[in-house]
Image (cartoon, rainbow, N blue to C red; front, side, top):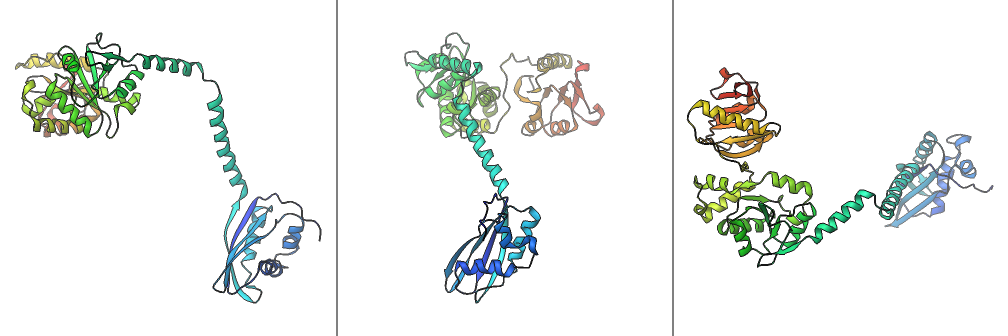
Length: 411
């Protein structure tokens, strides 16, 4: 027999074999060559294909249990796709191996080139990662790393309680109060220097003193511990705003985008008290009211803005002047003000969330927003007993609703 040339396989035929008796591997190999001989013509004769190196070494694996044999047959092929599947189908014509009945079934035909491609891709990814880690950083990365290091050095100890804080506590009119040193470091990393930590669940005297002369925003973790700290701060300090990290996350681990998103959705303590007690008195919050207020925070109540409240008016002309001032203030913000009967701002929400927000409020004196009055907004406003809808323009005609519609051209 001529020497078999090496095979550069393109396909591998995987076959399952079941034999009703005990046989050896040479019996299986003999049956493969013997029972397919002359079946496919001279060009696809297995012995000749193997001699020419177009079919590789046939591997047989057998497992004998309970007087029966079963296993696999693996045949590498460098033939084209059509010829390979013909060879595979020919194997299923084998019905006996030695003296025993047998059944051969092709399970799958593997394209070796696909496996190699997958290996090449995964290995290339690994090499690229190693290369990226070893190469020198670009100028922006160097700048960011230096800036990060400087910010980490900026943490100071503030007040008689020596609390971890940023360097701009005294210079800032607003101060962010967080739970611990790691929270301060994370906010410093993202450029916020007016941050101070409580260093525990009890409120230090330093923070109480700051709350009497600065605007205080409490920024707590999105868990049960954060709720407890909010309760403690509300009962002991003059805080102005409350912010919670996303559910299940801590302030020390959230990203820059999540920090700025949280800051934009801060909740004013005045609104919590207004909703709970119908009064602006700071000392009127009770323990069960605080729990309800925290529930409102978690549910995303509209966040009010700190700006001078409009005076209470009765004359429509004065109402219109208030509406005009607020609408001008909202141009380009895609936001909405919700007003009470005294024309005071109860809260500010994104226009995209306006319909969902006003469903939970009743009654509403007026809604001023940067957008167009639509039928959906009118429908939701009618259910909330809204008196005025003020916007840039309107798709709805005045005759179609009992709500007073006011657009920018009316002002």
